Length: 94
Image 1: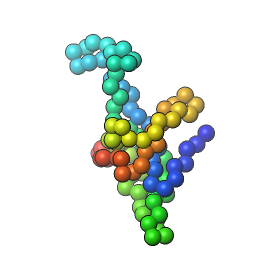
Image 2: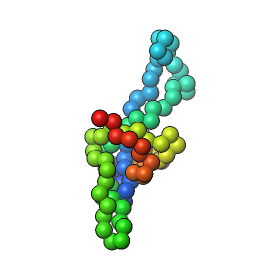
Image 3: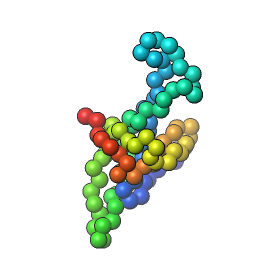
């Protein structure tokens, strides 16, 4: 199954949470803090403004930081994704 976001939405695949602390202690699954760093896997065509498409600021393959409580989580074929509006992406990591 393939996700094709609409408008100015973006599909992200979250990076894996750290499994151990800086001091070497292993964390239980529930204790892991979910990272806000993700990879862009799909990008919508852009929002319609006055009948014209606005260009998207991110592209497939970009690493981005996103708002902590932004987006909607979905699971497809055992993989978790986040569908988020472009305005909830805070920065592109270079």
